[in-house]
Image (cartoon, rainbow, N blue to C red; front, side):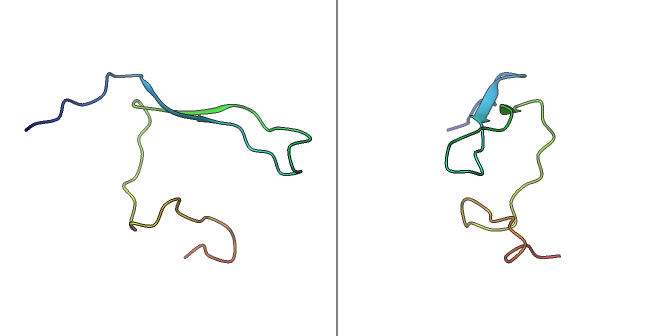
Length: 56
């Protein structure tokens, strides 16, 4: 069975991040099908990007 790709420009993920327990929120970030995303190198989700776990 073949999968059809999502429509171009379609929103895949929308999020806002709080770094102070929800007192304030950062800007809205949208990931769309137009974004040139790099495939993940791991099956762990979400991929951790903190300084402790980031691989350089």
